[in-house]
Length: 201
Image 1 (cartoon, rainbow, N blue to C red):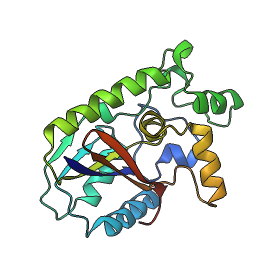
Image 2 (image 1 turned 120 degrees about the vertical axis):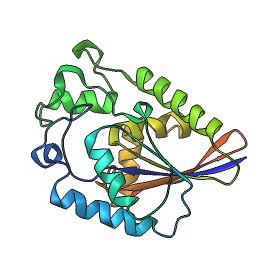
Image 3 (image 1 turned 30 degrees about the vertical axis):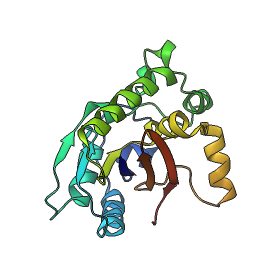
C-alpha cells in the first residue's frame, strides 16, 4: 500500500511575530500568516488530496481552512497532531538561551512539559492510525506544527534537529519556514522522505 503525505506547518502567528514560545497555547495567524496560508493553498491546489488531518489548535485550524477552501475534502481535527507541550515555558520569550537549548533537545520534562520520547510515542500512534484509516493511493494532508515536524523527521528518517538545521543552512533555507510544506511517502511498511519543509513545492 502506498500513501503520499503532505505536511504543512501553520503560518506566522502573533506569538511567532513577538518571539513567544507557543507549544500547546493558542495564538491566531497574523495577516502575514494568512498570506502564507494562501501561498500554501496555491502550492497544493493541483495535489489530489483525499483526506486532511489537522491539529485542533487555532493556528492550525485557521491554516487548514484557507488551504481547503472550496475543496470537498473530509477533514479530521486530531489531538495526535498537537504541538509539543513546553510546560511552564509556554508563552515566555524564546530569546532565553536555555529555552533555545531545550527546544533543540526537546527537554521540557522538568518544566512540566514533554520530552522527545513522549512526542515520538504520540506521533507513531497517530501515524499508525492514519495509515489504518487510509487506502492504497491516498494523498493525505497533515496541518500541524514545527517542533512536532522536527521530531517526526527524527522518528522516521533519522535526522536530529541539529542535523535538520545543518541541512537547511547548507541549502540556504529555513529549517521551519512559516507555512512550509514537506512531503513523505508510506510504501508497504516503509517511510520514504521526499523533501524536508520548504515554501514552494
